Length: 286
Image (cartoon, rainbow, N blue to C red; front, side, top):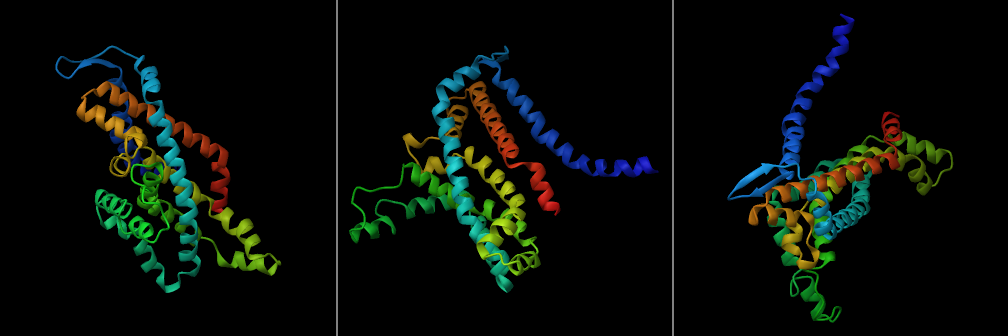
């Protein structure tokens, strides 16, 4: 009986584990095998264990990979700086309006991702409602533009992925017991000190989760760069899309995808080690 009870938690893991194996591990293994093939779409592809394709990808696409990781880092930092005050205000000052404020945060999800990005392009247009007005007022020069610039792409990414940061931060801040903050004030801690020593450490699980679920999809995004960017802001996702759909070079596209995934995993493990996942778990339990 005791052994059977000990197996119950592992039984609950079976559905999720099976899902990951079927829809993640097996496709990843298949993508790795495809990347090691040689041939063409007309003559067919043959598995030749061509590991030399990976140095070629690094040499040819290093700029796009670095640019994607740089944009993802900048977007993650911006969403954290913007999203933390939003989540903090909703959690501690929202009151009866918490649900309404959360609805406003996720409201953009009710509109297609592409439509949102196209609207952002209209807003950032050279003669759009923002830049056009500022140019008419003489605040900006007539030649100033944001479309097809890194700032425009990062701005679109920040807008589209901000809810991914706000929601986990809100969940973590909502769990903070207000009596702990009151106790800090009773011990003559200022608001800044109470936030630094009590609130922020207890919200680290939300920061950890928010950074992960924001950085990973941003690094592989191709919609924002394709709509808001230009030839000098191409991300690795745009290259993979072109190679796969237009050139039909499946091994090359698979190698790029696998290399991007490897770079993201290295970054995630480095980030987790630097932040200290054990400390984050201890804080969340506390």
